[in-house]
Every structure is written in structure tokens, then in C-alpha cells.
Image (cartoon, rainbow over the protein chains, first blue to last red):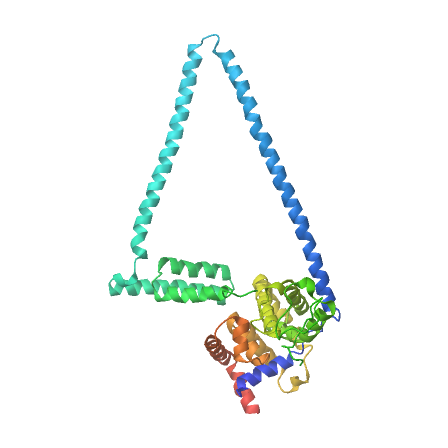
Length: 202
Length: 202
């Protein structure tokens, strides 16, 4: 084994901490009991889930049956309202419907404008995801620096603050914004530390 | 220590010995006495590793129980690529990772509270190394990033060969050696004065 004072110091500190607590003599029996206990709720949860799905389906069937009878009632009432003829109320009804249609058209216009803005934004973002090599050297350096700042920030979140979720988001952001940069590769390696190796069974 | 690669479990109704490192395909076939033997053979090593990976503090008994529970439940997925001992070490490392991820904040605040508690069960090695110095060394190991702490514990405290460490953490040998080197550098920076003190003392 290695003869390094550091290793000797580690081993001495480990011995000084003392042994781990004693395990109970019936550990194997406890494990088997725990395995049986944990399997029972799965069956219960399955039954509850199936009951909920059945109940939701039943409610949905009942609800969809109702509008048919309500529509029939509405049709009967509408037939009764036509008689006698009232021009004023018809005009006010038309005005109300027109206002409703204009409001809905305004919503549709808003949605279309939103969609157009998103498409423009996507078009503007496309040059940023192009290959880094296509940019002039000063621009490439700036982009690499920015990628480094993001990855460094993620490292600090992980190492100093223990905020692994936030760190992973930052690593992914670096990869998304600067996929061809050197620091994106570093970010991918850092992310792989959070994930189990492929083929790992546990 | 008992040979960790020996046939740990007999299968009903075939009581013949299995190949080294091969577990039965289904856990229903696991004989009670055989599982108890597996637990008895490996629990000390599992507890020692969990104790160290949790920073010589924390609920080791829970982790050990979870390790053997996971082993019991995942017997189907053990493919025999590694020995049973290595497989159990890998489960222990994963369980400790999960535990630390869930309790990251609690560990930070509890570290100082348990700092003196860790010394209460100390062995007679205390007279070779003061309690404070050994706690500083352990604190330095706890402060290492997870990927460095694991390889340091597995290689130098569990005294596993590098190939086995690589199998447990799921990385290549060269990656493990790089991590060990970086971990040693970080520890030297952090506990440099203690190293000089121990060098002078020896």
C-alpha cells in the first residue's frame, strides 16, 4: 500500500473516530420483515388508484349524459320564446353576440401576435446556437468567457452551497447556449457526475 | 475477513453450490439461513463504509438496513459481473449518496453539533493524535466533493484495490486515479500544517 504521510494521517483520524455502531443481531430478519411490509402498501395503492380511475370514468359518463337533456330543454324553451315577436330584444341580443364575437376575435389576435413574437425570438436565437468556430476570434473568446462564468457559477452552487438542482440547471443552460464551447463539454462531464452510469443496476 | 467472493446463498430446491459471485435468479428462492449468512458476512464492511461515507456521523444502522433491503429486493437484477462484495459496496455508495442528497442542509447544521460527539467513541489512538487534529482531518474529508470523498474512503480507508474502487463508483481506473490525485491535493492544501506536525512527530 502507499506510504504517504497524508494516507497515514487519514487512517489515524479514521481509527480515532472509533468503529461504527454495532448492528443488531437480527438484522437479516429485520430486512426480510421490512421487505414484506413495504410490499403491502403497493397492493393497497394499486387498488385505490384503480378505484379512483373507475370513479372518474363513471363521473365523466354521467356528466356527458347531462348536456343532451339540457340541450333538449333549451330547444323547447327557445321555441317558446320566439312567440310573440320582439324586435328590441332581438336587436339587443344581436348587439351582445356581436360584442362577444369581437372580444373573442381580440383574444385570437393576441394569441397570433404572441405566436409571431415567439417565432421572431426563435429566429433571433438561431445564430447564437451556430458553431463557435464561425465567429471572429474576439467574439469566440467572449462567448467562451461567458460559458466559463456560467459553469463556474454552477460549480460554486454545487460545491459551496450544496444546491445540486440549481447547479444542474446552470450546467444545462451552458450546454444549451454554448453547445460547441469547451466549457459545454466540462458542463456535460459535471452533469454525468450527478447521473448513474449507463448499465448501472442500482 | 471471510472470503467475500464465496458462494453466499443456496437456492431451493437445488442446494448445490453456485458459481462465485452468482446469486439466485429470484428472491423467492433465497433460503432464510443463507440470507442471514450473507448479512453476517458483509454487514461489518458495509457498516464501516457507510460510517465513513456519512462523515463518521449519521444513522449508520438505517443505511445498513437499507443496503441489505435493496440487495434483497434487487436480487433479480444482479448479473454477476462483479463479486457480491463489490455489488454491496456499490449499493452502499448509492444509498449514502441518496441520504446525503436528501439531508444536505441538515448535515451542514448538524456537523458542528456532532463534532465533539464523534470523538466520544474514540479508540486508544487518540494519544497518538489529538482529538482536535483528528476531527480536523475528518472535517477535511467531509468537505471534499462527493466524487473525491468516495474514492478516498474506498481506496485508503476501506483499502480496496483501484480496479474494485472503479467498479464500485462506476468509472474507469484512470478516472479514479485522477480523482484520487485531486483529492489528495485538496486535502494537503487543507490540512498542510497537520501533515508537517505529524511528519515532525514521527
